[in-house]
Amino acid sequence: MNLGAAAADPALGKLSAHVTDLETGQVLFAQDEGKPLVPASAAKLTTFAASTLTLPRDHRLATRVLQNSPEELVIRGEGDVTLEKSPGSGFFTGPASVQDLAQQVRRSLGADVGKIERIRVDNNVRESALFNPTWDRKDIGGGNVTNLDAVMLDAGRLDPSDSYSPRSEHPGQDVAANLADQLGLSGVDTGVTDGGQVAGGSGGREVAKVESAPLSVRQRDMMVHSDNLLAEAIGREIAAAAGKPATFDGATQATLEILRSHGIDTEGAVLKDNSGMSGDDRLTARTLDSILANADLRGKLEELPVAHAEGTLLTRFGQGSGAEDAAGRVRAKTGTLSGVNALAGSVTTKSGRPVSFAFLSNASEADSARPALDRLAAALYRQ
Image 1 (cartoon, rainbow, N blue to C red):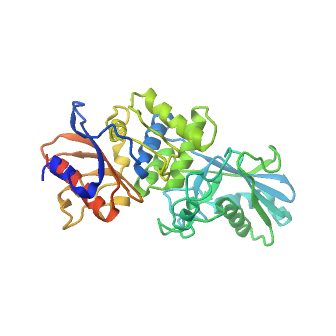
Image 2 (cartoon, one colour):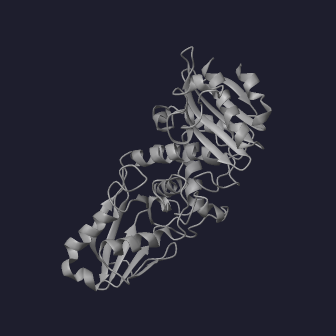
Image 3 (cartoon, rainbow, N blue to C red):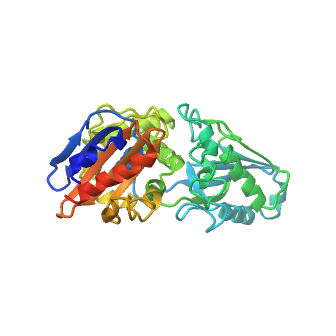
């Protein structure tokens, strides 16, 4: 099947497509490439790109425990949503642990640990709303989103062994409660401040500190697992680096401004979040392919999931799919919302030509559109 025939599959609904030769910059295929469509999680490519173009690859986020009084501890985070309870228990790659924090607190306070009556999470690093107004709170139980607190365990997953686990309604408080448990304290009052609010003043003696995995590791987790909360957290890092407010709007504005400053075509782009969970997001295939073909980003495509090998592409491009010959060869970011399906990435064709591509499909059903997108990518591989 040639590329044009694969793109004409009615299962793809409204299709926006753009393909670029990475060596020459030549546009090899385009179909409604300038039409803004809902991108779903393919929007994470904008977050990946802006963070790569702005932040050091070894950038880490600190989480500190401060003692404000003999009775109170404050957990002050810089936005790390990847914390785990104990080493090896968590979902993400190489995260910091609450167990490490607890051990440091014990060393710092000794017998005075028993005097602790309150543990607060300080959300001062998060300005304004912690839950995006364009999201649906039903998606907390669906395992997609929750409040973007300044510190979180496994991005709020109730079961860190399950990528699609339901999320906690109170992820920041879970960190405080787990710290209390690991300190052997019972009956401790735990809580979280509102976004932008400082817990217990700005002072306090530091009694523990841990750091997240480097940005490069967190970026790969974001792309392979399509983790929405991690994408939003990285969006806040982008906002901070750009001098924008630590809000959903500040993060998305910074993201688009950074892309434009690096020559990436953002015409028609509307971002309400950094994860693609918002149904109000709009991107074109041309914008996404422009990111993938950008000279400053081209060497970073190894962060994308490999077809039929990992992450959101693990079960795709399999035997009998009509796309199995492209398994292990296509690297791409997926995107799925109700009526929305996307695939954007890169492949070296059979003829040896490295190409990038972006396919956005709206008004389509996942059960039929995903295989059709895989066949479209496989048709590109066969060129």
